[in-house]
Image 1: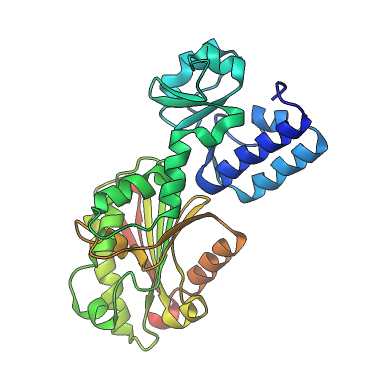
Image 2 (image 1 turned 90 degrees about the vertical axis):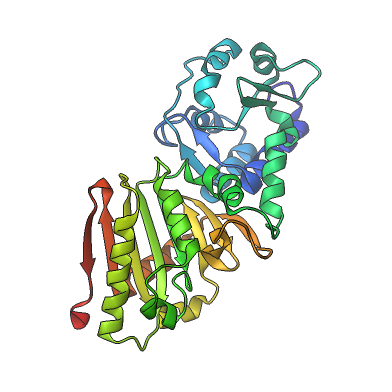
Length: 329
């Protein structure tokens, strides 16, 4: 941002990084951060700004897309690439000269061009799509909203950029009577699985749910058998599905362990995946988005280790394998 003085430049970087942290996901065209032109540019910044960016690499959401490689930073090169960029991003941040070359009016901070919002990099907070994302991240989901809208506006934008989806929900399969006696799964769980199966980018979908500690071997076998049948009913897809059945005792230290993670993006679910149950929401739900933290992976790893059983469906071949600890076989 050479058009700004030192203090203005630092403030602009802080605003950009805050928008990224609070409501965005950085999309890199290169295969990895190490290979990205952005990282190379960040390393050339003054120490204070470089350190600021480096701290955000560790705590904010990012992904790679491989959709487009812009060989030159000219506005013309970017303008030609906008239709392809649209497949992976919602907002393109540009310098003043580059933005004008792309077509942003001289008296505007942002404009929709080829379906993509182009915004001046030092005025990113004026992006309409960032503003909308902040509203969605901060507001509860009200009763009467359709579950399709909840999926399309909150979950799908994260899912379509991710390879991995992990649902951790203590009560996703209902209570003991429901788990053992009913021949169906709760609607929220099935809605999530069916919708996730339609997302082409997702290759691994895992679920962690609980069973009562007092379950007998026959109860456990019934639950796993039913899970196997339901996974087989999902549409054929290249994604792998794994359902871990975790003893309730393991959840006791994580009583509010209900979240849905897409790669590094986490949505905390106040009442679990039932937010996708039925056609419309019967009540108000609180959803909170945050970046993944180190403890999330630790908890997921502990749950997988403690699992009393799991059912896996591999890719689009509809092959299902079932495993249980030796003591339960």
